[in-house]
Length: 96
Image (cartoon, rainbow, N blue to C red):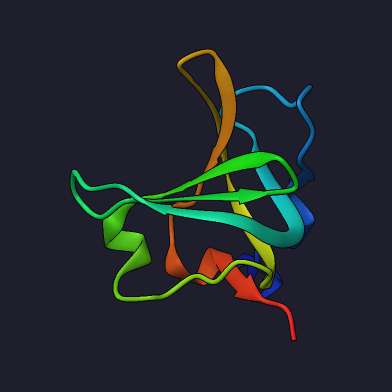
């Protein structure tokens, strides 16, 4: 039953005040795409927010600057800066 609801009812809209470990949603356009050379992880910048996508989640998917997206992920602080970590490929939705 809960699976049919998806993550939307359980996710908080992202802001810098959200605590680490919180499931959040973020909507916006991709401002920057960085593919890390050490393992193929992807870092997106969406609305001035860093979004970390592990290589296993990114797969062979290509991300393009300017693409509008809806993302779900967990907030964490990395090197003193908040970021969203996406845990599943289904948590990245291109808005058309």
